Amino acid sequence: MIAEIYHWWLGVILTVVSVLAIVGVVAGYLKKVVAPQYPGKRQKRED
Image (cartoon, rainbow, N blue to C red; front, side, top):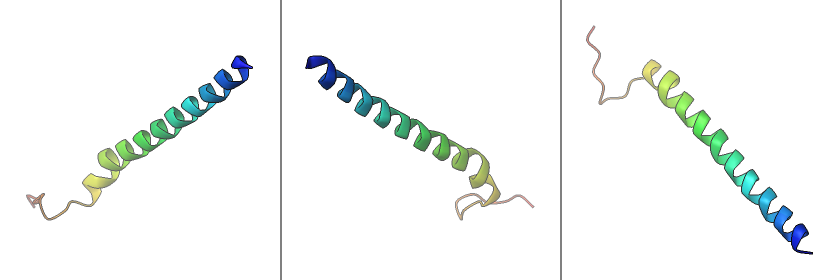
């Protein structure tokens, strides 16, 4: 009985961690690669 509950919560925790890791990778990609291509008003170009 306890093993079933433990495995269920372990699955929930691993799912949440996986989703957060994917969101972190996507956010890091957007910040590092896409953001420099489209500078906002705060970043002035030196052309």
